[in-house]
Image (cartoon, rainbow, N blue to C red; front, side):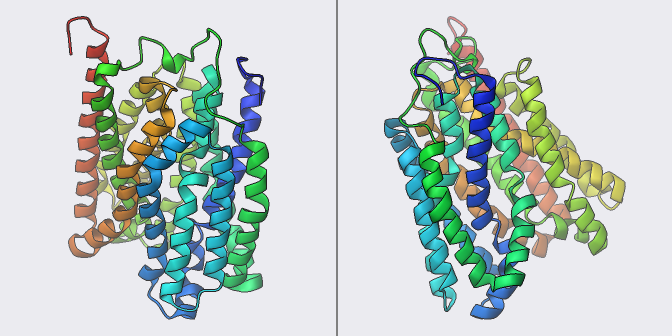
Length: 409
């Protein structure tokens, strides 16, 4: 992308972010997003329940979570270039297995293969590249990647529906397999820069300034606090997002209104990530995360008692999605800010283990909460989880401040 030791210019970061995002959109569209469109033909063809179809993504996320720490260490040692290409090849193989599935167990076997490739190609790759190569513009690059990648469902769902209508769900999986293994894998070798962290010469990124970084004495506690905060908030976020249509219907809205309200999630999330690019000069990543969690709690508190009114429900959803979108970015930028670039991928891998396990379990748990307890129990649970995440993040901020204050620990 740029010579070793040179600071990458803004347009170089934009180009890299766009190319990385295209790879991410292909990968997420072919894997996590596809069951939302294909579940019905898959269930009818294989003779399985709807829940079984979506269990494939749960398998993928669990395996990705378990592999995250090892993948992080690999990225820090050798960089994500070759690993990313290998990950897309493995994902392509898993998609090929899905296209050949004849029953529920062979279907899950395909997702097991995909889960082995996902942490290499999708979970940590793009933000690690930006942390290692972006220098003082790393946070800007991460913001761009999350903005572009957030468009994945908008692009992949219509494309998936078109392919399914033309070639069936098996043909769609085969097309995705070719895209992953035949296009994304070799493209990764050209798009992802070679090697690990870029060697800056006397120029530290803002995320590594002494007034923001957590000192080594408190590093381990800081990692644990941030991992807990993101796991708690991720559990609430992924749980509600996948059930927001059902949640709105349970609050008394008709199917059309519920769908319209749910459609507000995407734009608000994208706008939040774009806003971070503008406000990053005034707010640290950690402070932005605290504000985002405050917005989430402020959106959830009135959702239960006022959610039966469409306008108020829409306002709550927009605010919640805005906060969740900002937190999605903070999961990548806060570790860079308070732990630094050295060992960034390893830290992200450690944080990713509880975080991705929460992602995997949350949809099932919130489905049960909605079925057994109703919408108010689900909203109350999300509120309590978000409050706990806010409190944990506040403890982390206090730790960062105390580590910079002589005589305090």
